[in-house]
Length: 299
Image 1 (tube, rainbow, N blue to C red):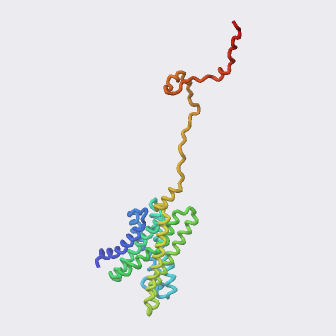
Image 2: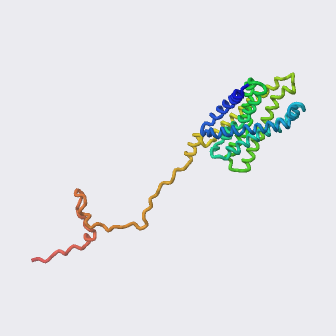
């Protein structure tokens, strides 16, 4: 098969799911160049993790993933596959995006974790298409590709919340807890889709991975809703901050310390209103003077 066709088939579900999650970042979208950079640089780590997992599993012998029984497969998928791949994806997001100014709301952790997860899933899809044919993408597109996003979304949501946590110790434990649950979810999904190998007469058990993904999708939707609800760019939060901000104090114009005083104008009476009453008021001091004595001499 033409390699360009293989790449196009592998990229199709990745492009769809990236659009699906990118549009959920409603208030302050991340720059596409940074999202694309996280996606591209996650792919070589996918190759590295795949080689390590293949070597530990004994190459084509599939010792831990199949031949040593179900318990060994559980340990392998959780302790090796889940640990390697989720730490690698977290490493890409933490080094490329987490400490940048563009990472400025909790939703960003989910967006960048989806980009890193799709970088992993796309390269895996290329190998699966080459090995098993083009129709395998019909199964991996809606399941495994989405699964990578949902696994990484657990630490992505934790990373987004931790970014704005002032307590450094609490911030560290939030990220560790998110990474732990993403490893558990990743390993559990791989175990569920492998159940048919351990119970050949009950291949339908592998379908249990579908309701498990549905639960993870529901959980991821709740995390997205919470991240958008507490975002500083949410219009409701902006209005709330504006309503809680006290108005600035009114500016007080101070009077000069020694204001200049002017003497009264002696000619002010000339500018009085002519219609005003100009009757002179008699000084009370003059009215109290004794009146002259009457002349009582008779002529």
